[in-house]
Image 1 (cartoon, one colour):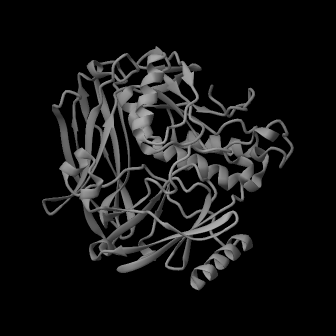
Image 2: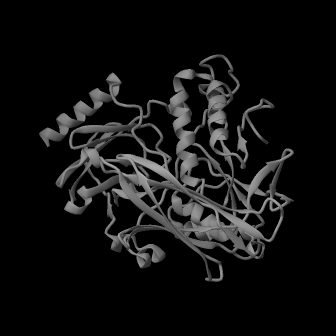
Image 3: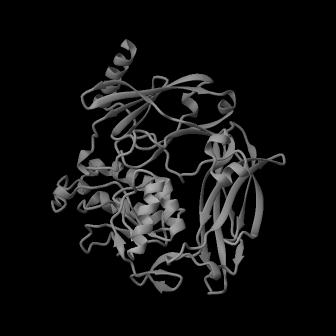
Length: 437
C-alpha cells in the first residue's frame, strides 16, 4: 500500500509538471487478430490465444484521482511478438504506466485507444497501472458519456513480428458504370525484427451468398522495424446485385478475411464484413450509387451493450430513421451493427465547446486556441482511423458545437488529406470553407 501511495504521488507530480508525452497512443483500424480461421469466423476471442482481458482493480482513491492496477503475466510466446493494450471506458482522462514507466497521457475519455507496449514489457509478471484524473482539456470534452463498467471491453493482444499492422479496404463501383466492382485493398505489413524479413499477406472474399470470389497472396521483403503496403485490386463481378443501402431488410455484406502466412502455415486472421458502394460528394450533393442520399437523421449514442443497442437501432429503423449522428466515437461493435442493419453513420470526433463557440478571438473559443491544436488533431485522427473501413460511415464531423478557427481549419485539412471521397463537416463553419456540407 505504501508503494502504491508513493506511486500515486509520483504520477500526480508527473502530470502537473507536464513532463509526460502528449499521448503515446497509436491510430489504426480497430481489428483483432485470431490464431485460427474458425476462431476468426466465430469471433471467438477467448480461444484465439492472442488476447487477455484487462480488468484493473482499484488500488487508491483520493478525491477526483484514483489509481487502478493489474498484474499481468506475459507468456513467453508473447515476448516474441508485438503486444498492444486496447482501452475503452476509462470514465475520465488517464495516465498509463507500465512497470513504473510512463507510457501515455490521454485527455479523451470517450474514444477507445490502443497502445503498443512491446518495449515496456518483460516475460512473466508485469505491473500495469492507470491513474484516472481530471482532464487538462475540460473545455472541449463531452459532458456525459454512456455509463459502462470502467474499462469494460479493454484487453491486451499480441501479433507475430511478421503481421498485419493496418489495412484500408473498400468495394467500389467501376468508374465506367459496368456491372462489377473493384476491391481496393491496402494491407500494411509489419516486420518487427531488427533485420530484413519476408512477410506474406493475403485475403479472400466471399459473396453475401457464400461463394468464394477471390483469393490472393503476396510476398514482400521489408527492412527491419518498418512496414510496407501491399495493394490488391481485383474485379468483383455482379456486385450491383448486392448493393449496400438502407432498406426494410438487412443489406448484403461481403465476407473478407485477411491473413498472413509463413512457410506454408497461416499465422493470423482478421475478419471483416464489407458493403458494396461508394459515398461521395458530387456538386455539393451527397451521392451513393448514382443517387442522392435522402437522410433522416437521429442523434444517438450506443446503449450499455451490443444487445441493447441492436434492439434500439432496429426500433429507430422501423421509425424511418436511416442516419445516426453520435456525439463521439462509439464502440467497435456499434459500427458493425450499423453495417449489418443498414444504417448510415456520420462519425464525430470528441470535440465539444458550445459555451464560447461565437468568441472568435484567439483563445476565445477553444477551436481558435493554437495551444490545443495537437489535442484537436489527435481526437480527429483517433476517430477517423477506427471507423474508416466501415461501410456505414458516410461522413465525418469535426466534433459538435465548438465554434470555428485555427484548430478546426487544421483538422479539416488533415482529414481531407486522407479521406478523398466522404465529406467532412464542421458544425459551426457558418459558411466558411472548412465544411463540405
